[in-house]
Image (cartoon, rainbow, N blue to C red; front, side, top):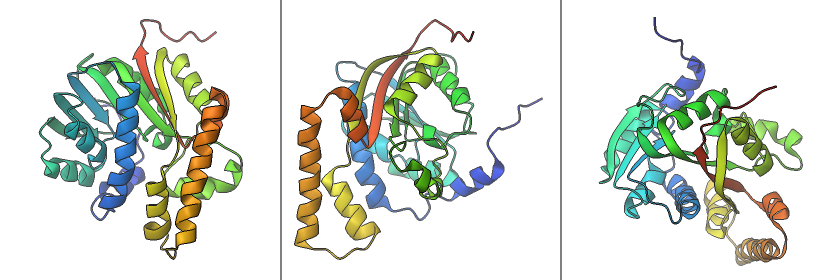
Length: 258
C-alpha cells in the first residue's frame, strides 16, 4: 500500500505551471548569488555527486554547471514545468532530473556527496520530514533560507504568503532546527541583497521610474550596510542579512527529545 502524499493537492497544482511563464532574467539574477553562497560555504571541499532538492527551473544548477562545481549534478522538483525547463537547458553536468512528491527523495541511502536545499524550506509544511530525507541521502547538506523573521513580520504575513513562505527564519532558529535534527553546522554565511538585484526589482518588477537619484540611493544604502557589516559582530551581521546559508553534515547521533 503506497504512502499518502503529505503535500496538499492544491499546492502541487499551484506549482505545476509555475515556470511556464516565469521571468527568466529575474530568476537567473537571484540564482547567481544563491549559487555563489553555495560555493562559498563549500570552499575547500570537493564533491562528485550533488543533488539539488526543489531545483525549480535549474537556474542555480546553471551556474554550478558553468563553474564546474561537481562532475555529476542531479535534480528533483515538485513542479512539472520546472522539470521541463531544467531539462531544456541541456546542462553538461546534469545527469538526471526527476519529479518528486515534495518529501520522499527517490534515491538510495547516502547516494550523494552533497544535497542542496536553497530557498525551499520556507515553503515546506513538514520541515523535519524533508530534513531527515536530506540526511538520509547525503553526508553533507547546504541549506539556504531568506531571513524573513525580522521587525514588522506580523504586518507582512500577506506578503510572505503571496510568495508561498509559510515558515520564517532567523539564523538562530534555523541552527536550532538543524541541531535538533542531528545536523552539525560546519560553515555558514550571511548575505545581503546586491544593488543589481534591488535595481532590477525596483525598475523592472515594480516598474518604478528610473532616475539617477534612485540609483545612487540604492548603491549608497548597500555600501553603508556593507561597511556596518564589517564593523559589527556576527550577531548584528545576522540581523542585517537578507539570507542565511549553512553547510552541514549529518551526524550518527539521533535527536534526543526528553
